[in-house]
Image 1 (spheres, rainbow, N blue to C red):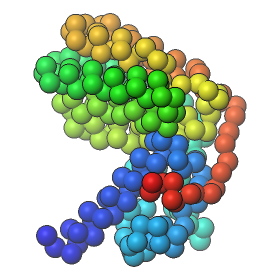
Image 2: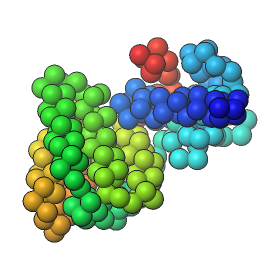
Image 3: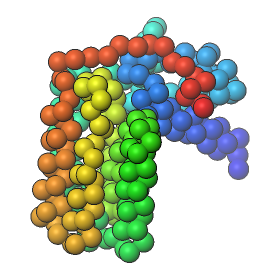
Length: 228
């Protein structure tokens, strides 16, 4: 492995850590990402931090502002609606792909994921619930057999988590409790029409539960919590 490959892998790992922290609401929308503090927290050079921030900017999760620095994206109401509009286009196709591609091992993996979601709810672990809710949709995308859709969903799910962090009503679950179960049941039954109907209802339910007149502002990042 070359030095460049090693540097890229480290930067990708940092970007993945930031993405996971966003998906668990451990970093708030609009947070400023200080290169020096990040370099200290991750124990790497600022060059690697810049590489990671560039990767995150390419996916839309971070915004790089001239003379101001890097900030976690803070989607507007219009951008939030556009995210859901795109997901309503992509995710029916994901359902169709999963039904046509899924093996018994994939169905087993989906059911194991549902159990993990139930366990997180039983433990009232909101951060884990939020992350697993997003991971459910990523898992479906990984099974569907379309790598381009999978790549787009890898960008859309963290952005959706930012939208939820900005506009959710307190105590509203990231995803309504039994809707993932019903989607998996339709997939297992091979019912394309029902699966698509349930997914569209699910996405609309999430969007309608948001307070798109509200907002959240917090530019402090607790890097011990992010790395913990």
